[in-house]
Length: 431
Ligand SMILES: NC(=O)CC[C@H](N)C(=O)O
Image 1 (tube, protein in one colour):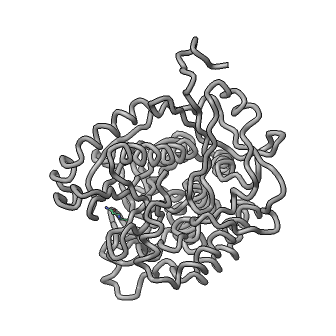
Image 2 (cartoon, helix red, strand yellow):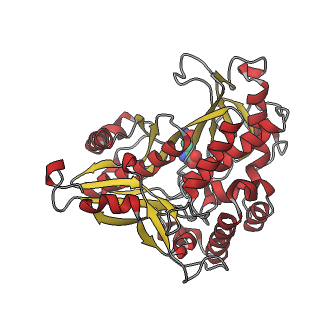
Image 3 (cartoon, helix red, strand yellow):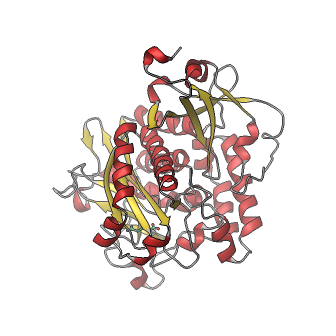
């Protein structure tokens, strides 16, 4: 049992959290002396946790109601030090006997990476974390990518880097984004489950440091109606055996046939996964041409309006070639969004799909020639619910829960005035 001899104090605590279908992290806290209980028995959670909506409404379904009991379990190897006596670990949802719950999104991503491994494929993902900081100062001295902006918030950045070092969060870069008060933090690529854990951790650290400084961090897809959106882009790369599939091949920009098929698989599946990647009732406000949110269903080398931006293998990309998947926003559960992207790429590779033509201009200039991702609730939800690939990757329970949550959120909020909805949910995805 951890105690004073391990350097822990009597008030030190361990927080375990999961991410639900609304993209909200929900947690339990135990005294650190009960760490082994959190690992071996878990902390109780009602199955209804899975159908919490962004406003805390419970979208009950036949499988998720008031009856039953699940566990949040952590792994001792995943524990990170957040400072001030708080330790954190990503949790999995299990049944009481410890078997994985079929509603657990972290297990779902594990299953997809295992499926890739059976085909000899390994994926790595680097998350981008976008957020807007709100206070008086940020609005005064701000330019997109501005030196003024990063210097105005240098104390925040210093604290964030210190906390990242303590918590072993691999931050690669910080910059001011296009929106007022908006920043982006880039995380190093990692195994997909660890990368999603890191994205959850990054959000917790950013939220916590902001609060400690009297600021507030918004991870909303649209913090202020009419402003800049927050994305949650993922940079994905694959190796087959030891060889990268996005470089060194005979295709455009060095794509191998498998790399081209991965791009094709992702593009084919984007409409059916929009509910997963950008499925909140605010997401459509960001998924528009000109927002650099990748609403155009196409790919292109360094094309920032394409849903899939190819970053080729050059000296400027030290981690090698990768695909930046841009439509994803911070309302997405990162385990499910990664599972969707990797599963779609795998499906493309398995089917040896041909690479579609590259779009090497602003797709908006091709007036109507490039499809947009769906944004009408009926299209977004209909495509998801009828997706055989989603059912195959996620299983029926996650499908049922996600459809219920997104269905409720759209029915409840899509017709309401956007200013009020954006304001109400500005901090809904803050940890
Ligand atoms: N530089 C960028 O790619 C901006 C991304 C944009 N904020 C988004 O919503 O996705």
